[in-house]
Structure formats: structure tokens, C-alpha cells
Image 1: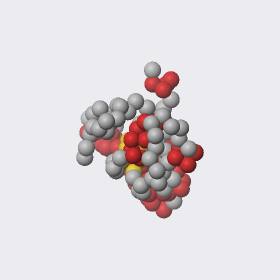
Image 2: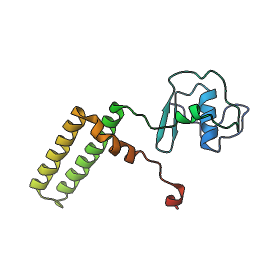
Image 3: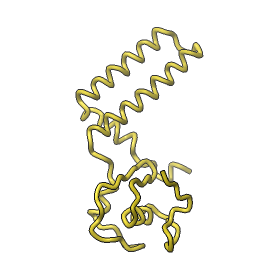
Image 4: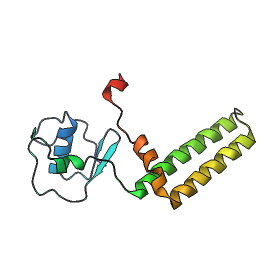
Length: 140
């Protein structure tokens, strides 16, 4: 793993915007780019390099969308279920919740995971909500 804390390439200015980051990603050999809640994975090399400050075409802008892949929905749902199970177990260990409630929560989470394996499309909205970008106005 390479973490370039200044995020630029030799001879280029420091990346300042998500568009700059995307151009740097496209024009270099990086395998992944993380911008907020989005992870871009290199699958193919682009046909041409992108110039700094050049507007993104609609086709390039579409690459920044969420992965519409049932496996991604399943992975996200499983991650959230494991985190909820761990939080519930921690509450039980501190004797904040009772053992029957712990068992009930674990059974419900197990059923949700089973449903996610059988019908991943049901969890698409859950995935999209969890990966939604938080508006900058809400962060301040």
C-alpha cells in the first residue's frame, strides 16, 4: 500500500479537488482511489489522459457512481450486521441488555444475513443509503 500524504505526482501540483484526484487516478498507475465514501478500482486503462482542470465528460462522471453489484450489497449488509452483533454483545457483556434480548437480536441479524444471501436486491436501498454522500452543509 502506498499512501502519498501530499497526493500529487512528480512535477504536478498537489491535488485539491475530487476532480483533480480523479484525473490523477486516471493518469497514473494507482489501483484504487478513495474519495469520501467511494472507492474507485482500476479495471482498465483509459484511452486518453485527462488534462488538469478539464471538465469531466458524462461518461467519465458516471464512473464515480456507486457499484450496482449484488455482491457489494451483500458485503455491506454483512459488515453492518457484524458491527451490530458486536455492539449488542458488548452491551450484553456490560449487563446493559439481558441474555434473551441478545439471542433475539442475533437471530434477527442471522435471518437478515440469510435473506441478503437469497435476495440481495432487497438490500440495495440499504447499501445506497449507507454509501450516500453527506452534504458538506450537514458536516459543519
